Image (cartoon, rainbow, N blue to C red; front, side, top):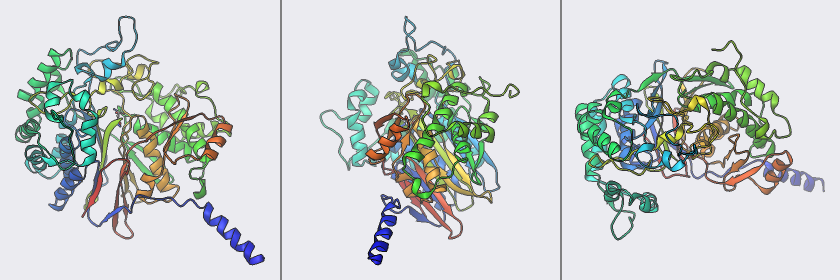
Length: 563
Ligand code: DON
């Protein structure tokens, strides 16, 4: 009887340990790794590493290749952020976010009655900001890379001019957007077929895009921001009611900025600062969550989800009020990422949920002045690069620049077109993120590198997903640091999302049992929608065993490739 009882107890203990299924083992390598949303683009990056290039060379080559093989979000018509850790210990970031054109104005997306019109900020030429990707990637290559433009751009040029074999998911994506593509002659020509749908195994050739890439290869920035390509952009923008001019293009400059730094349970967080809200929101949340300790078995429990959601309400409320382009608005960055603010939020978290309506942003002390893509790269020299880049919506505003072969972004929707009205991600914003000429719109992109206690890169992570980027990156980090998961488990595990307003916790399939939902409701939380949250691409380096682990999110169809 006693033995039976002991075995029974053992059985109960065993089944209560959360065994998380993972899609597969992470990819392992000893020298370098590239993880991106496209298997072809990851291989382009790894080949550069194998030729002796560093992580920056590989990241830029991967970025240009993604513009060909993953036009949903890989781009030269959009913008992005690159977080870099160099082998000599330097941490830096490159901001190549799009900018509002010179003639943009505050109320440009309101109708005659002062009402915000979402279609204006997401469709047509008016929705496009001045693209930053080419200038940003070339800046990174020139300053921190070791290879020539020729070597770095050639793989992308080859993929565009000779074509690449599309897989079934990409074929499906093109077919899903057929109706929208057909609205624009230039897009229809490249991304639709007259009588039939795309099928896997077909070759997709993009001659015009190859021409544009060749022009960038030959004359650098001037091959995009001046001359023929710039003329095509400006002419088509003007003819269709857009604001981007030749001067806007020739004046565009990427900006190298200091990263946002944080410390979470002795791991140094290096992330992106304004105009992204990502790094600040991530560090603010981690500073607060550090005040709690999560036992392994707490993963997925109502108390864990409740605590993280409560913290996120304050973080997103602060984001809406205080974050915007720092070159235009005094973001109280120091205060937002301080341990004090983290503690303050933690002290407000109780057993019962505080309704979002009762939470508003806090003020700093008086004395203080659905498509994006992420890729992660590490090399054998000790450099690491974390890049998130976007056209905003899937395939941006769906408009291919005729004769230049690339899709334009609809990033203007990331501004707060009208304070108090939400954008396509339901995100609210205020004065800090209002439209002004040449201002960069606020982003949630959170490319992040985590360093170990010896200041060596230990994890490289990021994700697409609009507002869910921040909560995705946060949870993958918590899964690794607090719950000891490997990088594939940490990325695969179902996620949840709270962004203050709307006041609800969204969740993923199999991510929340009915019991957990009931317990959360009892605590006063509102249960939201089931949906897919983010698509992370990450790397972890195990220095003890000299292994680099890479993992691509099974929610997408990318791949980790190492050597
Ligand atoms: O910069 C931002 O925060 C948004 N434009 C990102 C959009 C996005 O992630 C959509 N992807 N699924």
